[in-house]
Image 1 (cartoon, helix red, strand yellow):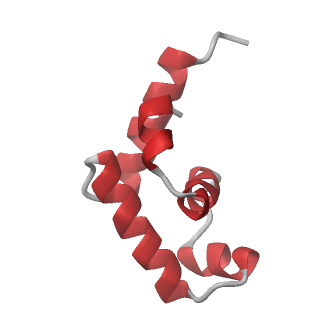
Image 2: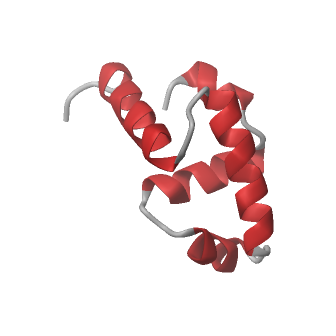
Image 3: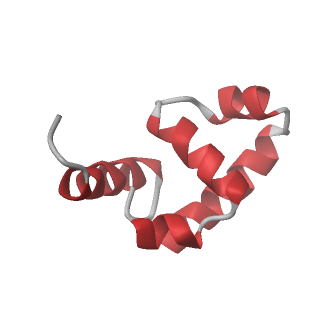
Length: 74
């Protein structure tokens, strides 16, 4: 994940972003983090705003493309 974007996130937003990138639904994320689904949606909105993307799909695409340019090939 881009260090600049990642640095803007709270610890909870980082946790949620990791789970989003794994393809989990809001409901699954809420269960895993022991929070309500509405709280996950709130954090997702903040994540989208900080990442300057309109939705989850755009976030995943952006972060995956940033990871490829930052991470060395394996």
